Length: 457
Image (cartoon, rainbow, N blue to C red; front, top):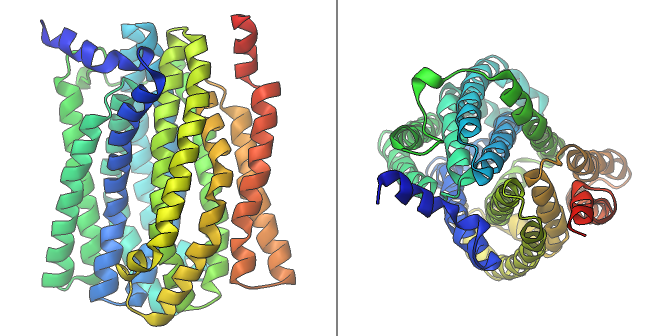
């Protein structure tokens, strides 16, 4: 059997077999990969928090993370559009279109990386100041951001390459690359921060060097492939029609991610007003909370890829069943994870801080927010299925208004009437619940899935 046929056989399982098994086989490598990706910043926060102090922890784990998610998240959202396009063409067996979509996507990643690098270097001080970060953490925050954005091209190249591999069903190799780069990040953190005493600067350099490694690994894999998604420098150019299709699907996801981050910036700015202890506790919760979001992201990628390939292959009944199976699986995962987090919240928090006040605050936040995670399940599953079939614009509007605009309005209005941490935290269950109801109505009454249902009748 030729190498090409081996690769085809390796990647084509999504349109065949038992749905829940195929979703799990695809989900777990993504989950573990997302876990190791989460460890990039988590390792920085743990080592900096233990060996430098809570001011450095607040900078690395709180304020800078929110700003990075705002800018990088937008372009990662665009890469999800590329993944949908690639998965649809791959499922349909249109090799030339796969090639065009792959190379157009990398042009977009490189251009986005250069843009973000310039924006990050120029506006880092102003952005940190605008968020109202306390004076004692501003210098740390600016240092971390500027170094991080020096290496942001590697981040975007890896994310685009990993999205393409996952789009064709290969979720294992991106996992291996993340494991290698994460272990590199931890080793470099210990070297730069603990041994060389480089503090926040060392954590930032460790992150960008490890991200560069993951980018090199994913590009080497794509360049060696014998399949239609093989990357070749001589084919690197923008196909306008393909770019338009990628942006049509990816731009709503990018805007959605950006709106999430903007609402989180408003919340972070609000939290900053409660002092360094609360900022540090919020940063600790953010790391624990990341376990939930990486689970949602992994299942979301699995559902989107499943929907995209089956839509491209015109297996519409299987596509519909995949959404229902994904909904059940995501609900069970959320309930199980929520129980574990609430049961082991204290030992998890101790990984990041030994300060008793910060520890108590972080546990209070965990116990308040975690039971409401279940309200987000419908938002995640329905939006990802719809994105997989190319219905991205209205879901973006629902998420932007329901989980972003509504959250900001709550902070501004309710926060002014009854200021306090728990008023701020209440914005999460409120926005998730309302957005879930909106998705249920749209999915079953107005969405692209309703049109597909009519085709199957």
